[in-house]
Image (cartoon, rainbow, N blue to C red; front, side, top):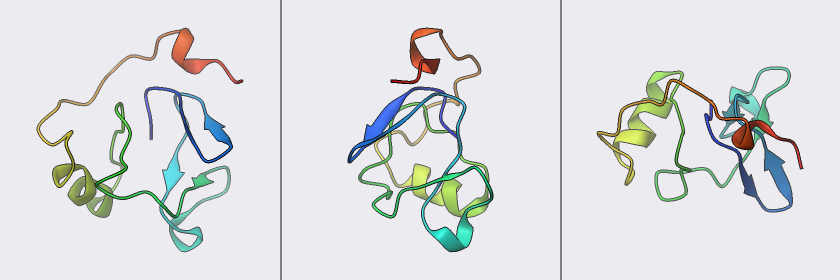
Amino acid sequence: MTTRAFHFGSTRVRAGKTIADSQANAQSGDYVWTGMSSATLPQGFTPLDASATTMKNASKWAGVAAELTITGADSIDA
């Protein structure tokens, strides 16, 4: 899940949405970003399972506490 809006390719994802790294790992309503990895992980990413935690721990965001709030600017759809 992300606490900040960001985009990948031509897709903009608002804060509060869940992103999966494959269709097999996605649930209904999730965005699928097959390019998601520890190298491409966005700021404000909150891991929801062991695989996502491993990805975050290998990223530049390792050790950064999960954000607990979402600002209005980061929750706007574009």
